[in-house]
Length: 380
Image (cartoon, rainbow, N blue to C red):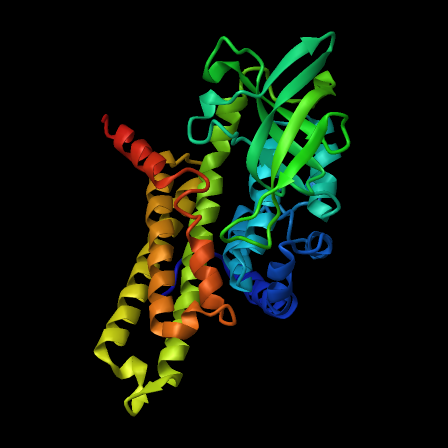
């Protein structure tokens, strides 16, 4: 099946990137999953190859090509570890876009340039112990002290939260207001009072570092404010379209990889004198898998095209995320079933994928929130 959204240069890039992922990332995934962290050098290598700045302005070291970054988020998923893909994705697709879109030239020079080179790692801090989907319910707050701000509070479930060099944190600057009382601050690692209080152990995404962040009387200068005061909530929401697109692209390609593995296994594994793929129960399962995958890809590419054209397809991207994440979970479950007992063993990648896929309907906005967005777009 062919799609006209990508140009020949993007397909050439895909071929080279897939080779890199297969040769340089995939062979180390088991080791990184065991260590529950992949090396910082991976960022540096990706930066040297130009893979971290594809959608960013050329003046800061990027290529100004959003479609190239879309290809990247698809292909990096094929390393076989959602933890590796999410750690990289959180840096270039979630944290840095906030600075690129709302930062001053000085902030962009300070954070984008080394971030694109892979010399520093960024994170986005939104979720708190008592506030996830209800962003207006965050408790972290900042008060003025002269020209500085003093920040107190905490964040949790933060991808790259253990080793990030800086975090874009959503903080209340007016506790009497709701959404309009929230701002964003860039907080550097090493700032007194800012620490990672705990590294979290997870069901999946094990190779990514996920942490709880604590802010105790953290003093930051006025130029740590990202964008204008009180606009933080709206700034965060503005990037959710791209974040959810990233997740949709990754889910589709991750599901395609599982289909390929299950298809190969169904051809090689014999039972009752023939390949198990010759049994209708298995062949129809595979037919369902690839049909759902291609439906998800087609719709996600349509939404990607809308985004590239300058639209803000909030409803459509909610639909894409809602469908692709649950689809990927179904595909992973069927792949495990096809593998049978072997699929339940850690020596095969299916068990890890089954765990990894389950975060999709939660992260970046739960399925329930996606349904609310869709329903409200129709006046409900």
